[in-house]
Image 1 (cartoon, helix red, strand yellow):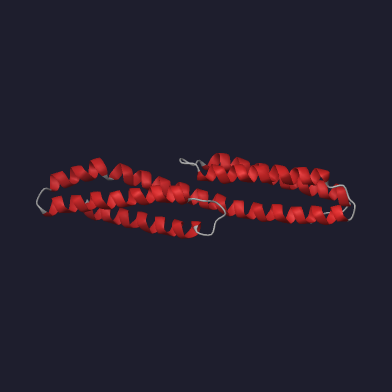
Image 2: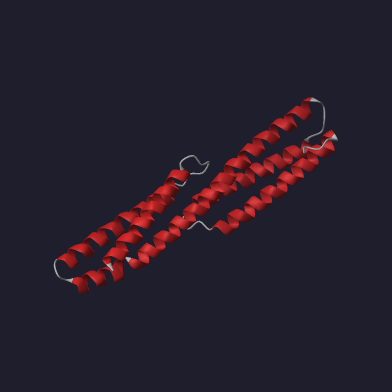
Length: 177
C-alpha cells in the first residue's frame, strides 16, 4: 500500500507542477489556490514519510492506519483541487483572449468615431464587457472556484461580442468578418 501511495503522490506532484507552469503567464492571479495545494502536497509527503517510518520499524498496522486516516482523503481532495486549477487555467486563457478582444474593439470604435460615426452602442457594449471581464477575473481567484459560473460569464461575453459586431456593422455599414 505504501508503494501505491507513493505512485499516487508522484502523479499528484507531476500534475500539480504541470499546472503551476501553465498558470505562469495567465491574466488571472491563481497564487492563493496554488499556495493551498502546495501546503496539502507538503503535508501529504510528511504523512507518507511518517507511515514509511512506522512500516520500517515493524508497525505496519499503524502505518496503514496513518495512511487511511490522514492520507487518502486529503490526496483525493488534492487531485480535485488540481482539477479546479486546470479549469481555472483554461478560464484564465479565455480571460486573456477576451481582454485582447476588448482592446481590439476599443481600437475599432475609436477609428470609426474619428470618421464621425456614432459608436455609442459599441462603447456601451465595451464598458459592459470590461465589467464582466473583471467579474470573471475575481471569480477565478475565489477559494472554492467553481467553473460553471465562469463558463456562464464567458458565454455572456460571447453574446456581448456578437452585439458589439452588430453595433459596429450598424454604425459603419460594414461587416467585421
